[in-house]
Image (tube, rainbow, N blue to C red):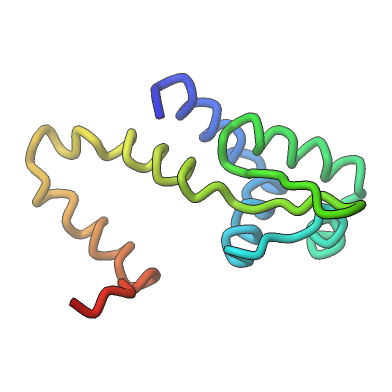
Length: 116
């Protein structure tokens, strides 16, 4: 992810409903949720939710896939990874040990599936 895309993603998340939508979709990975269920879960009118989902999609944080008559939305974890990587790429001026506490805080939420 480049600077412009990162700014777009951060701007998309800098709004309460969109941040709630993104967090909800992350919680429903990998299955995702139909747009109507997202709107219902957050008590947001369907047309307003469509606008929020469009902003998140343009920002590279959400993906949409038609499933019959509904559209299922999923968090784009690759977009989240790209944004996070961009923000941390030059971590602490080449001193990655300074970022170690941040990385350690992220690790417990997503335990590795590797048993090697």
